[in-house]
Image (cartoon, rainbow, N blue to C red; front, side):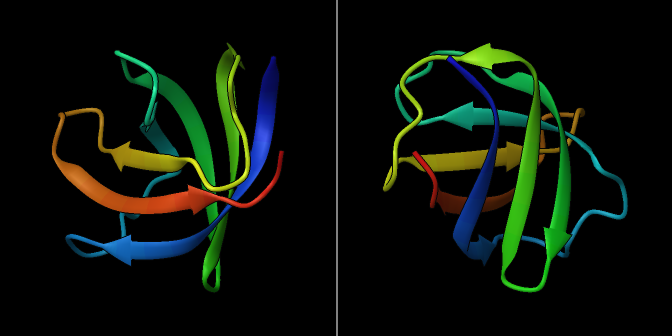
Amino acid sequence: AKREYRVTVLNWIAEPPEREALQVKVRHSPEFIQARVAVVGDSAHVELERPERGLAAGRRVRFSMPDSQPSRDGRNADH
């Protein structure tokens, strides 16, 4: 299980959030997880509130604001 990873190939659905506290949903997971997300250029460093199994290169990840409004999608670059 991993708690930290890097996401690349980010696609904005709305304007970038001004806060780091977001919810993260990995493609295979049925639920969103609280996380801290630091966007740096065209990638993001993600630190999950709790470890998540199954994170692998190429997996899609969805970031949402805590009010459940989608903000950004991307692919996990690390495994």
